[in-house]
Image 1 (cartoon, rainbow, N blue to C red):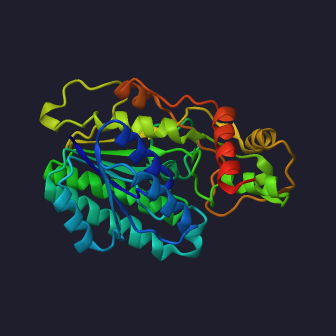
Image 2 (image 1 turned 90 degrees about the vertical axis):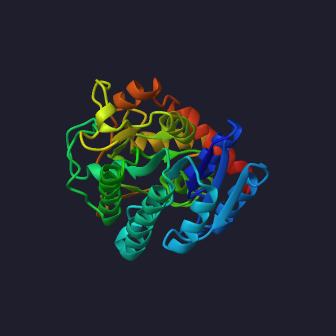
Image 3 (image 1 turned 60 degrees about the horizontal axis):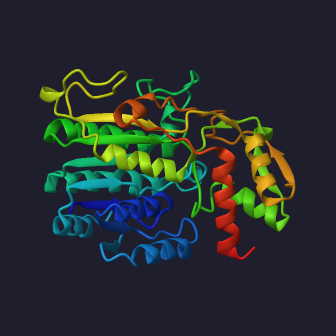
Length: 337
């Protein structure tokens, strides 16, 4: 039985990934700081659901607590580590930048150091489409430059990728960094657009739409994302001496067992059309408050997911309306609306 350490196991994506891995027979060791960035009750209930599985255990502690993290990792000795824990949110990085330095820089360094200490077979680290920053050529491909971040959040995630490459090179630690594109679905975060829009529409309160809805996002359903991560677990980057011919468009480093992979739906959706879909599922119209573009926002994201397909034979495919319907159904059930 393989052991997987999942950081951020009480988070939106971490919960779904842990559930997937448990269903496939893995032992899952969770690690989550339970920070109050959003409603901790959601995190507690996600962990409670996972704890019903006999092969799930969890520690509630911050990544910045290196002694605790190291103790957990050395005791579990996981073959696979999936690092999802982070201080998330683009706009919040304007208000509390230090939280991003602590969690995303210090915390990620601590995690990588622990992965080295146990000789993990594969380290997988969550990054973000935000690292593409001011790039305007689309769809975003992994080989595009990512040197113009527009927020500290994006900068810390890119720094995590760079630190991981250095460790992969120095210590031969096989590492995959995957860049998420606007993940949505049941058990989502309350600070994300789908959650806020659904709540506003059902409560009859105004929703804020930036750039008058003329923004585009590559919305990726959480179930698709989790399946992609699961498949990437088996796509271990080879050591440079054993690399072979590779696959078309591969980002495998020439000096380390390391690559970057996009996980996105491969389609861009206009924000105004996204709101239309939520209105249709909620059965009522939104009170739309149109606002200008916010600092740090980008006008569009769109993933080139051909490398993911080449490595795993899979790419996200859930239609937007179907994914939105699943979220709205979960929201109504969870909040009794």
